[in-house]
Length: 283
Image (cartoon, rainbow, N blue to C red):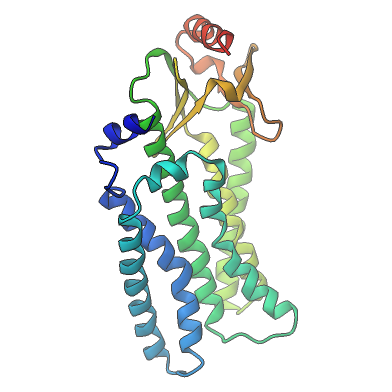
């Protein structure tokens, strides 16, 4: 596997991740740490212009340092993409929002600009974290599929019922989060910032509306999203179910959501089922 990984990514055992991955990783660390540096600076400086410049310097400095460290860590992207815990990269930035509003809840009084910094740290960190998760998973999938043989492929959305529910909730989440932003800036409402968090719910659920490409290979199942390729070996699946509405692949873990494909979207259901029978039977 190590040989496959190096050959697929064009890296030797002494090379680090590619330049795009290095840049995104550096920006992610900066989005997470720069607000803390500015809050520390605010203890000695109160001038808004100086703090703004300090924020830009902090973002630049942390990005450069973090990018340098990541570039010197061989196999980092592939290693992260192998584990489900990589999603923590997109979740950790929410510590900013929880920290600021938690401080207010216990009676502390953070600086006025702490809330905007929390928004930057949360929103920027989450978006960059999602990008980093997608890039890590894609690089791991490319490595694992170096010599894989494809048996079947189809493109499908989630079943219609799921799409309707997800679309409705997303629309409500986007609307409420927009009203929250308006109330926060116009009426200085603290609840507005809490409502803003619903934006992230809408972003996640909108993914349900996008089609995904499924590839059945001898190594495992590949799920390709518009910006991400994910690979899971057949040992992580127990069975599949074919109904009048959907083709459902069941994972081993009870907590992991099943892959649900709208049957109407699959061009050749028989080929898909035959390939799944052959691959799952070997486990």
